[in-house]
Length: 252
Ligand code: NAI
Image (cartoon, helix red, strand yellow):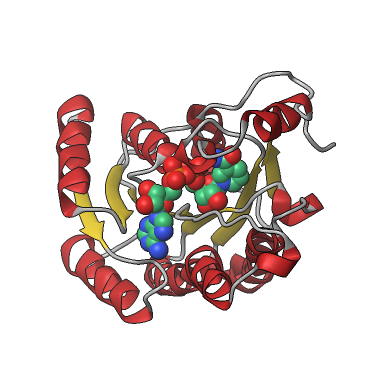
């Protein structure tokens, strides 16, 4: 059986790919031969620049679709465009996410709604539309970026942790439902990764989190991107419904 990291001919959508992990993932998948579709809620200019960079550096097809993953109609429109142009989708990386930290007593309704809209609803909307496209080819790999906080919780992260625990439940249920269609669904639970998402942390919290990493270093976006590559490729063709920690041993 031939199976390797080669993603030639595969079409991959990476949500939130103007950010740290999404951008590293888009470049990694392109490096291994995929055509990548970038997405973010951020400005069209950033996405356009990144698209050109990918095309130039990896000599591959690339597209940029600006939309809010938590906007049901916008997601459907995006997949209509993908279908029109490519007629297929092989890899979906549900990566877009926003972080909201607050103690229980301080949580506001709008923070719950916004966090769940992106981190949870967005995952379901994209998974649903992607599965419809993947079903046509009886093949696909969906990788949901959850979080260590969705597995073990954290003080001040009731909202974020809840939104990410939901991603794990979504992954397990979708994996069961879609396995017979040869669509694999896995999640990655990153630990403490060096991106803009954590740049607001106070030095005290930063050091606390770093001390919890058994490997004694902060993770890099590429550490997560390499795990995505494995789950996207045929090397993982018999793996579904798994939650892969990329956390330097924060939880074991
Ligand atoms: P980041 O902030 O660098 O990137 C997130 C990207 O998602 C941003 O570019 C942002 O504009 C985009 N985004 C936010 N809301 C969106 C929406 N509604 N629609 C489309 N795009 C949207 O953060 P990072 O670290 O690269 O995060 C990527 C994923 O990894 C997130 O789901 C995050 O929760 C998860 N994660 C990150 C960890 C870390 O330590 N950095 C740890 C555990 C999980």
